Length: 168
Image (cartoon, rainbow, N blue to C red):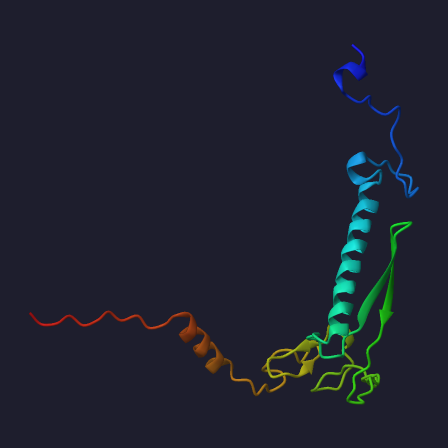
């Protein structure tokens, strides 16, 4: 039987390469793109729609943002189906400047002043200690562990009492 008589299309002669020339094979279901390029294209289209809607809401004055967040605008080139994101920075109107915080000094033990770096231990009292002074009895911790434990037990095990029976 001939393919024209049955209405079926002949399978392609060979595998179809991705139209973005990434080296992988594409399929007709993904518009002759590989799965990665297809997902990237879908993601870029969603970002363009989101940006267009956010720009439209800003232009209309119905924006719910506080003005501190950057707005992302996307220009879409319909001839090549590529999205070019452009970041527009919106400065706050209150005149606040984003100055970099000064770098803090090295982390040190609160008891012996030894540099601890990443190996420091945070206690429940809120201080940082070295390996020697990490236990509460070694640094005279003001945190009340007994009261905290009592509160945790009371919270985990509420008192359950049955209603009193009325006399007959």
